[in-house]
Every structure is written in structure tokens, then in C-alpha cells.
Image (cartoon, rainbow, N blue to C red; front, side, top):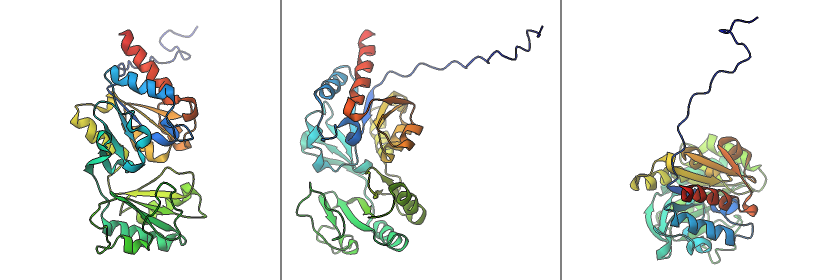
Length: 294
């Protein structure tokens, strides 16, 4: 008989873990996460967002979108009215037409350094410059249907001090390659130009988004939470693409959508349904139910 002190088949007791903090803030990405594939907000999601606010939980939309593309959710942000746009480069007030409250720009000289590095490392790359007042892009860059009439010129001109809109801060630089695989392009760009900006991606194509060093959804969300006395442990975050990774890893509780990128699925603590299945709303409903149950 094996002595009781050995007990080889008995697992060691797990250390006790503190109960999760009561959520005080929900941070959610939009495209591929909160929004349906047709870029609308479902009735169920609208109701869940309103229920969260009534339960005392602040909701922040945290997106790579510019402020001018926020009309789809502007009617559904309550209370503070704020949203984090351009991957953390801008905090805007949706109650005031997307008025910038804080801007964390990418310096033009750093953006030019990225352009030079990628032109050498990945020939065929084309660029767009997202400024606080609109987007400007090169002739080869795939145009956005939501931005008609943008100025088209070489990136070097768009980033020059003498450019007509140089007074508008650069929120992010976009780099597109017609042939490279998206994740391979991201890895290459970080290796040759990572000293000049923070690189990420959220598109299914080889389209990179470059912010100022240290600027991300996570870093700006952390600043907004600190201003409200909200800790990371009190934040529940949702996302689906690499530009959500830092935010999901910072938040005390994180959910990957069923349709998420493999790296997001690997980095998050929880899963929820796809964006087409109202995955965010399903989790919010459970959170609100627990709060109301007391």
C-alpha cells in the first residue's frame, strides 16, 4: 500500500484565486467585433449597450476607424460620449460630432522614415496618410469608398512640411502591398521600421497601420481608465484582430470573437460568438444579469 504521504495520483490543490472585479468599463472594437458584416449595429446589441450603461458600466468604442466613420455607433454611446479612434491616436466626443479631445500623433519625420524603409524592403508598397482632418493617399493606394475627393500625391509630398494640410496631425500611416501575405508583411515592416512607429493590422488584406511609438488601443484606453479611477481588472474587452491584441492583454477580462485572428484567440482568456451572432451582446447580457442579481 502506498503511504498516504506520497499519493502519486492526487493532483496538488490549486491556489485560491480572487473573484474577478465587478466590471466598470466595457471596451469593444467595432469591425468584426461589435458590428455586423454589413457594418450595422443589431437591435440586440443596441439594447445590450443601453443595459450596460443603466447598470453603471461605461462603454468605450475602441477602433481603428477615424472619427468621420463613427456615425454608425454615435447614437449608441451614452454618458461620456467618448470613443477611441485610429488605434488610440485620437479620443473623440461623439456627442459633439467627433470633436477631438486628445490627439497622439505620428511625427511626420518618423512617418517618412517608415515610407523610406518599406519602399526599400517591400517594393510595390503604396501609402496613405490619415490626418485629423481626412485621408490623403498615393495614386497606387486602393481608395476608400467612404472618402471621396481625397488628395492624391506621393507620400513624401503628403508628409512634407509644405503640404497644404500639414497643420493637421498625422494620426496614422497606412501601407498596402498587393502581393505579400498580411502577417508576413507585418513581420517584415516591424523588422525594418519598428524603430519609427508601432505597426499593426486589422484588414484581411496586406494593409498595415502605423501609429506613433507607444500609441495603441491599450495605451490610450489605459489613460482614459486612469482618469476615471478604473483599473485594468475592472475592464472587459472584446476584439478580433491584431490591432486589438494589446488592449485584450491589458484588460482584466478579455473576449475573442469566434471569427478572431489566431493570435487573438491564443491571447485571450475567454471566447464568445462571432460578430454575426451578437457575441458581444451575449456577454454583456450575462454581465448585467449578474449585477442586477446582486
